[in-house]
Length: 492
Image 1 (cartoon, rainbow, N blue to C red):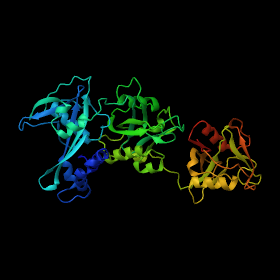
Image 2 (cartoon, one colour):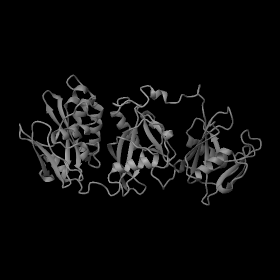
Image 3 (cartoon, rainbow, N blue to C red):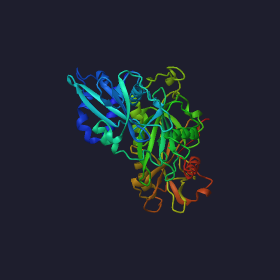
Image 4 (spheres, rainbow, N blue to C red):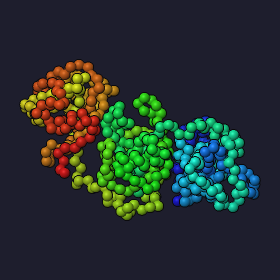
């Protein structure tokens, strides 16, 4: 099918994020896509899109083609076709047609996997509605491949390789001369944006090891850092998929580049590769992290996920609607609904409880001995806890700490360290217990509610009392081990 106007808009907006000074020139184009009229219909506009391939060889020379009829010299390019899966694919198709260079002989320039290197607009007949959009993508020729350069298209007279300072167009020449001599960073990461035919994306819940791993306790893409044996970012992402989850995705295509900052503030370059897979994550052997799961783009707001990852998923989803793939899903059209487990009959509200994990500098943890007349766990040790009322979980924690023990905690010093989903006994209401660490606090524990708690004491996690609430014991062990989530009491 033809590329959607949304696909064009994403490319233009991503480009303008890097070249904001060009927004005046391209603003009318975005207006035309957002507010179509009779002569600027969204469907008609896509027919006036041209994609070009700027190819740089290992010597730094830029590929040009000379047309027989006009004698003009330009970079390879032409109109998009319904068979093009992306704008960059259209550029590669025209490169092959005009020069004989196959797509596998070139790789996207790092940082320009899906972002055009240059965009311009040429007015045609009839004003704004007849504008022609030119998007040029930057590639480099593989040093390993011996490429026969033979045109398959009539009208191409000669192939030329020109040094960057002799590129035919001034605007391209200026940008190419500004490219750094080193085209890839010494270290780089690569991640996989894996999607299925139901329009869902495979996300990885990372271990909660602050300061030791990237994005601790967050949902992210599978991937990791380049190692010496990886010749390309694609080698990196394929190795990481195999090592982390035993995954082998047949078709991985460059989708984009993300730049993130590590804890030291250093910019990290992440090459993103997209691939389709219709398997069951629960059957994968996960060697790192907590779990893998499918999520629809509309569910991302519920997750603890980096904004850049969320944006990548939504950008990809805009150009790849569910069911639009040319390859049917593995189990047939109905499989998307069939494979989702049905919810148990009837909705059962879950009780949400907040729990304070207060650890002193010597490693001991605060526990309170519950009153003998307590309805829950009488004469049993438990962390400071309470039920959420009409308030946020963190607000509840701060309130309970002040009311029960006279401790003052500021919101900025609170972090989630464990979630345990549990039922205490058959037919009990299920509970979602949130454990928060207070990195700093003021005050010493006091018996503010002696009808609920008769004693506060700090305990060594390796020598906890025998009469300790069972799920609290599980949670403390998981927190000590850096694990973010657990379940107890549910039938196997």
